[in-house]
Length: 268
Image (cartoon, rainbow, N blue to C red; front, side, top):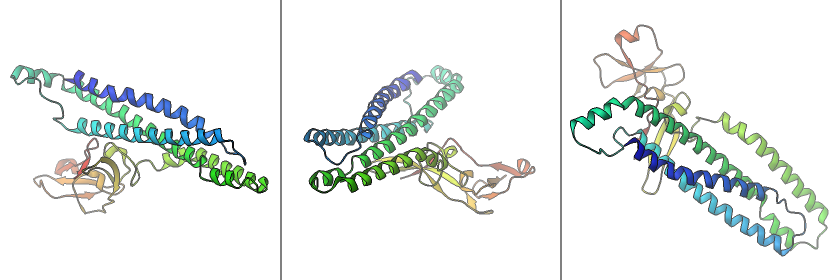
């Protein structure tokens, strides 16, 4: 069963890797086209073709991301795969290899998480390339009779600003990892006080971090909802009313903590 799931997952991964490599080359080539004041017709056609290819690549990357999120969500489900046999012996064999299957599933989820991050970076690079291939190229060609020096200075200034933004963008993205609205796979990908919500609609589905930030003594269903330094505590003998509190040594004798770091909250 594990091999069947692995084969089903590896096919979109190969397609994803090929798309990422081809998109990276396309973005690199497009980013090198900084328009001077005058452009021949061949350059106009080339840049239009580059824009069309960028749009197609971006659409394909979105489709691949949705496939990865769907696969990731199915891996989080305890009974996501079909049962091949119904005899008691096959169930015992499945339980015997349970730990190995959990480890394999965890490793695969980590790989999917890395690939989703690569897709995010590629999309940002595509947006940067589209800003370079901006509409001011058209205005430059239509007003070629004007003095070229002010336009050249403006284009150079915009290009330098875009290059500076690209250099600092990865640092900004890393600092925002796990904040409200960023992508996630499970609760552990979000910051304290944030939970990973899997939003399912008729058209698409996505997983994002949502801030809760519950204060002390507020009712909770998972530790991800509580603010920093607080945990979701469920007293012994009370299966319905857990609340946020600071952890203490006596809590182990009086109840348990609720924190499912590898799960998500599904919003239909």
